[in-house]
Image 1 (cartoon, one colour):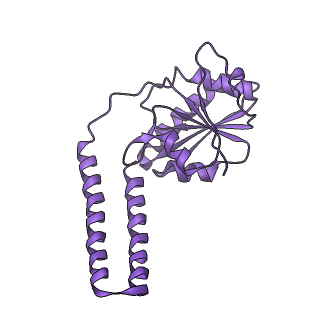
Image 2 (cartoon, one colour):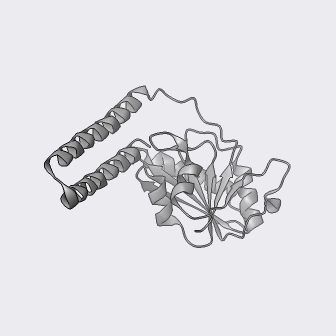
Image 3 (tube, one colour):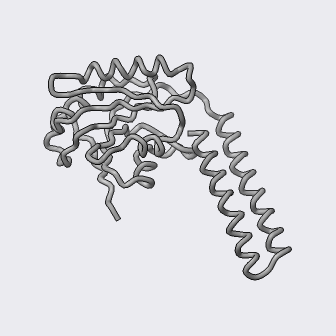
Length: 211
């Protein structure tokens, strides 16, 4: 099994060139939003790109088309800040909520994924680096120091998400009890397996909605 290369970001006193990274042709920087303060980490992205002699792709997800323009402008600004005679920067905005899917679509051999330690994803708000680590077998570089805005209350959305989650579990549990009562042997096993597959699929879809 391929080991994922999770590398801690260098401290301010340790240049990226000494961080022990494998050569990369392109850095794919995952940008969660434009509400955070990226100024402290931009020099470190530039330093990493210079050390790797790599181009930079700033990649972000947009849940609402009305926000796409402002998000794209923010990425262009970030690209302009790292662009130099040695570093080529580009930006890309994709619609959706699932980082794993969008990274799969954009990743090419020789790329290095750059994400922030402060980024969260999924229903349980796990660090994005952990989510990518558990799903993908690609090199990941983690940067820390991103200033996040004070989070808004998400109590209502979390209540809705967990209510849907419990509803799915209870509904399929009752279905599986009925299957046990009305079937036996091999047919029972087949029906139970067939009931588990859509249950997992619905949970995965629900998780992607509330990322």
